[in-house]
Length: 261
Image 1 (cartoon, rainbow, N blue to C red):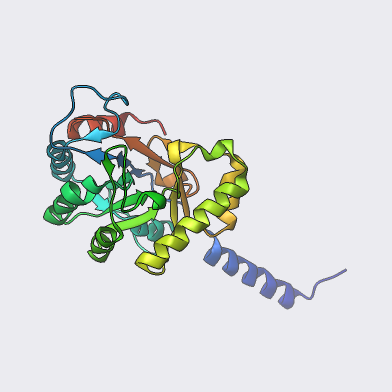
Image 2 (cartoon, helix red, strand yellow):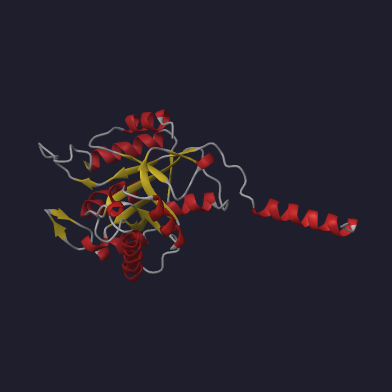
């Protein structure tokens, strides 16, 4: 079978143009560290059952922020990161993200004022069933506080499940149902969410759960430890660095620089 030369050339050119438009260009080799904090207190207890891995002080947090700013880091939101992934904007040379898990009241009491003071962005991953409650002497955010932070345009509110269990031990449909329910609750209280990010409780996931959430319009999934790099960034496999008690800004930068992804 012979092609008519002009038609063949036209089809070839259209194919090349289509591929040029649709293929994602090579990304820059830029680290994207995402820091993970949990609860905060002014006075640290003498002992901690979690070995001080999930508690910190506002003073230490502010030191972290000042050190990172002084070293040229730019604080981004997940929307900023997603826009860069979609080639809608450029990343700064030293991007960094702040995240807080579980939705503790201390995030509003101590951290939100510091975010406003330094005009930096952050994301809080909430356990929706805990909102407005005090559990085991831990006080959680209210929806009114979530709304105030969300309206500031500094704080994104995302799902950390409805009940914070090990979902890798359960049928994947339970995780699917849970995540969709958590976002129904979030949207009922905060309005339509254009970007949906899910942080797995305990970092517990399965390959099947990743696929199921992708198919249910979850834009990004967070569940591993480490530093992301934009060159091979996978928004369904996002890593974070947990910041234990009193870790300094200098130590955070050393951890970022020593990461091998």
